Length: 300
Image 1 (cartoon, helix red, strand yellow):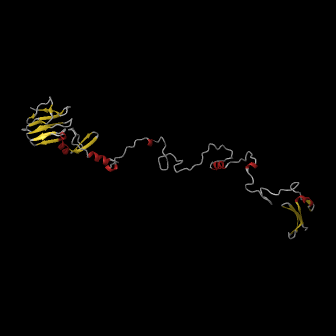
Image 2 (cartoon, helix red, strand yellow; image 1 turned 90 degrees about the vertical axis):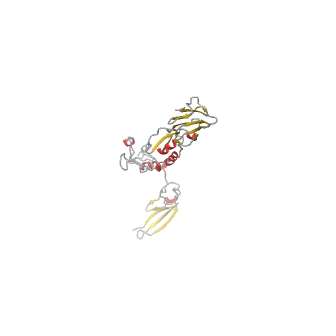
Image 3 (cartoon, helix red, strand yellow; image 1 turned 60 degrees about the horizontal axis):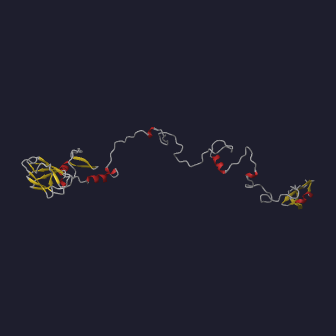
């Protein structure tokens, strides 16, 4: 078989190469400028350059056998058509998160932005585990009465301290009042917004004054007390008693009590006398005039 002769373009040169078809060895016959390539012929064939005056020497900054690479073209070099549209990266992300078929030209304005969903997201309404309660669920408004239970005082914040403050109050100046029973041996009274609970025997002990001496001088601490006089005596009413002072008392049978006015003390004009007979009762009441006492009762 005869050898084959071909023309090969290498950069700006055209080389005519002979190929031995038996062993495929090659040999260059002639090399010339690409502008003179028309002078070369092989078996009657003529090489025609890409354009008059010379061919392309480089593309995209590369020479030789140039193959298109990623980045050689952008969308500005390609015309969009009806079924071939371009989307931005953010639109591509929305499409990737959207179920169904998308042609790329849908209105994406109503789609929900992607966000991180925690474990309570998209739960069913219900009353069992892994469900959520609905707004009109009756459990949101029905009454929940507490079950019977007990607590120690320390379970209630501040209770121990509050009780301590109440028990430390001085009840010696409390007036004689009728107190409701708490326990069989206890009494309770509210004084100035403070509750008091004391043993009955202790309370009444503090309210009574037992007089078994021949002379006794009243003090402001005797305010609202009840005197039980067991022996004939003289009771002195001094000056300086509290302005609201009052007390009552009772003579034992066979006992006589004389009331003496201290220095600066006067007896009110409505007093009934200064001597209390056997088995009789009295009341001492401070008037609204300082150091003026009203002595009332079965006096002579």
